[in-house]
Amino acid sequence: MKLGMVGLPNVGKSTLFNALTNAGAESANYPFCTIEPNVGVVSVPDERLNYLENMYHPKKFTPAVLEFVDIAGLVKGASKGEGLGNKFLSNIREVDAIVHVVRCFEDPNIVHVDGQIGPKRDIETINLELIFSDIEILERRLSKSIKAAKADKKLQGEVDLLERLIAHLEDGKTARSFDFTEDELEMIKQTPLLSNKPVIYAANLCEEDFSGNLEENRFYQEVCEIAKEENAAVLPICAKIEEDIADMDAEEKSMFLAELNLKESGLDRIIREGYSLLGLISFLTAGSDEVRAWTITRGTKAPRAAGKIHTDFEKGFIRAEIISFDDLVACQTMATAKEKGLVRLEGKEYVMQDGDIVNFRFNV
Ligand code: GDP
Image (cartoon, rainbow, N blue to C red):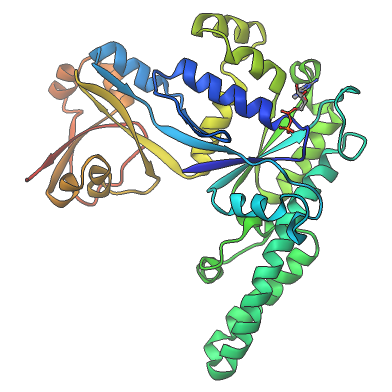
């Protein structure tokens, strides 16, 4: 699963991206890798895994991971091929969700492409490029659908939807803020739209504002207004602070965060929110060999989850022995949990829950 970081030039994308990838290397025990200069893999912070690590002292520790892509190069006119426009748009096409970094800090030394800070205008600039590109794609589909609907009246519903959606986009609104019915979602599925990708707006504030009253921060509030219309998430963040924290060891980091009255870094929150925005949850396996988090989408049933570990596990699935993380913590040891009957046997129809600790039984 991939998250793309987008934003206008000089908003703090690279600062965040570098902090993110540094922090990944530091905190995770995970063989962090930069796949390409602008692509990095980071581990998903998960206290449950650390708890299990202390319990089992495993040889190997493997957290869930997310891939981040720093998508630079957007300028006004990208959808018309200006600048690195086409490359930018195709990069966005490949990600599953977007972290949209918005400049909310003032700094006379750092030029703003439009001369002054304007989060709402900046967000709209980027979103408009995505919208233009979506309109182009939808219009092509519409002209095909109109022809097809002449022969098959059943397709008229699709024509109506495309026309309404195009009108919505032409108003400068993203596809995210369109009220799709279930049927319409199904219809639009085959035409992935850039402005329909889930998004987190990361409001990049200066140090002082970040620790101040956000209710009264007009830049931050501008971001919130847009996010509200789109049902999107907003995260206040300070790229400068994240840059500083990224180099610290775990102890220094938690002291520093405590001074700021924070439980976790902004990056950790971006990673966690991103994971959840993508509809992802983790199930866990634990033993003396390895403690590990496995990523599945919410709603996944037990056999499919088993298949994440090995295809044979899915094919030969018999049952899953499952205990929820909270039950294990309450019992302290697996043996006590078993005595109390808290280790359940679940079958093929069981829908996996976040934090399930699992042992699969299967035929080979
Ligand atoms: P990008 O073009 O969006 O990738 O922006 P960069 O991450 O390269 O940042 C542009 C400049 O803004 C750099 O000089 C950063 O050090 C600076 N910068 C980034 N975030 C902040 C911040 O929160 N406060 C201040 N004052 N400067 C920042």
